[in-house]
Image 1: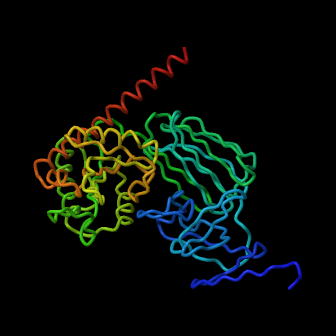
Image 2 (image 1 turned 90 degrees about the vertical axis):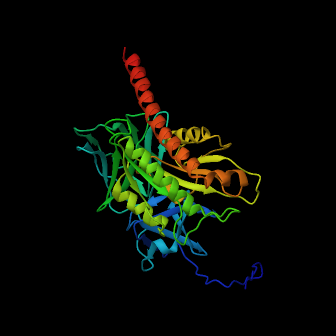
Image 3 (image 1 turned 30 degrees about the horizontal axis):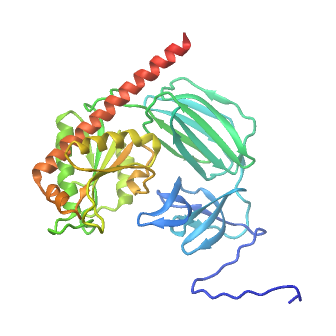
Length: 401
């Protein structure tokens, strides 16, 4: 050793592998629900997710902690990916990058689309923002090639679209949406072409004809929370979900369920099933619990700001049951709040760990009341969405005069 050098020694039970920038370690995503995390922190629901990715997206790995690989998305941005959703490639190769191709923006009878050709399946992050409503997609490793954007006939959900090169290796798509309430989107690849599918609002913002997904939380071996009387969350959520289905159906809605019986259904399987069923919105029903028996009340949860109006309407409806308010919670890191394809909200009906709340939860009459109020909450969300659309249209007309 040189006289001015130092030596540090550490021990670990984990396998240690040193990576060198001269020999990049690449990986590709696998499976249908691959995702990136912001960092190493986590709670009981897992790490904070940056977003989902399509399969075969190429990632540049620069380190590993436990079962998470560090991903170099851009010069100034990293993320973490679970090892179970990636497949390592042989060491070496080129760090993924691409110039962009010319965009194609068009609509068919069902959706609006944006397609951007690339040389590789690059990682991306999306954000659905409000005021104004817009979808922002960052593509890491992409650089503009001064391509043009062709907007064809048939667009109904998309307004103006443009791009920004926010960093030499971060290409940002900015997609303005015509409606105040966003109804969802999906991002993936067709070959190496980034393909974004924008969902349009339902033809009529009313329950009749609307497809509503109802999720009865837990089930089977996944019991959920248990009250002092021995009541199980899985049974209460199913009872309320079945009553909610009946109420929605009576008002003309088409209802799809993630489970209809006392059975075990993995949350990932629920998400995939809902992706196939393509509902207009989702209500996920749960029962809350805490170590303090004095805590009580109802609450609703959302992840994306654009979907907050649904959770607010459901929260206000649940308060009309006479339950105390525990709050409306945003940025909630729950699997069924993760999909971007449709507005969704989770309802923690009440605290089964509180004696007063539990007494209500196991009462069939109260379960029926909850179902009726949740139905009214969905109707109120639709009514407010109609009103927001009218106000937005009037404001636009006034600005044009």
